Image 1: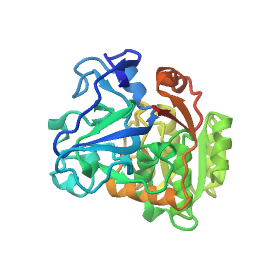
Image 2: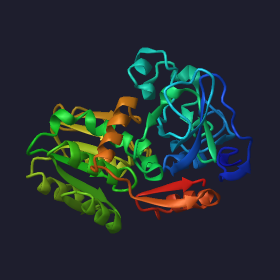
Image 3: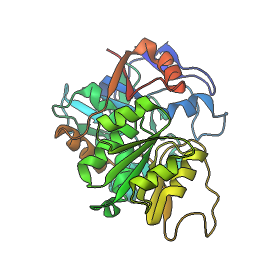
Image 4: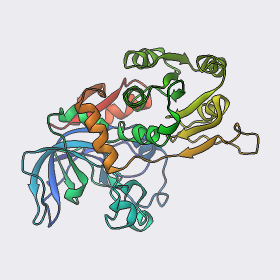
Length: 346
């Protein structure tokens, strides 16, 4: 079968011929419907040297995956061949306390395991078939479109988790700032509108991204620049915002978050843009907390899919064939993807 693989660090992905997976006991093979191309993959392609990550190439890319159950290994129960499923992306040990709570994104044995999941050290979904190591990592899709659902496993789940940790602040009269209206941002906006009454303000450097943000439910769009912080505060009645969801994580966006969050607010950095926030007593307002997050839990993925099933959340998807995956990453790098790009092996 054909697969899009990272063969070495700081190297363009390649479409290669690889063996079709055969499930061992407890494992499941899915026929891939869609695999999202994620901006975080660019860090795998562009940034890392040998020995930096706890895993090494080669491996198949693609950590946002959906498909249909193709083959079940002995002892793999709970699913039927042909059933549409989503793949929960973070693969932990399955045995520690956090994994037992469905929080494999924060597995206590992550350092020991090394590979973080399919597409992140182990073979992902940019292939005709994907091997999933345990049926516990599959979630039924029901009647959701499998291709359009692929981004929900990360681009939907990651902002959902970030929003959920601040849900007690998102009360009537509150304001939330979303920085970045791209693949994660357009889903974060829909999630916020679905589960909270907060006013949603979005900042992006591209007008077309802000247009999409307003289309999917943002109350206000603000162009990034020197005047952005003041404009955001105006939309927050001059008080500052209660919650910042920074989906970029670069120096300017973190600084914007710190300049606009109000006392007792949350500044949550989701994007891995390499920015830093020098900290002192006066860096952020009193009792404002700063946190990072990573992906989300398996129960939260079920909740995201439930929102999609009820029509509250929908990924804006552009489909590409497997052979075009290397070029899709070039488009991502150039900022030329609106919404989410999904590789469709079929």
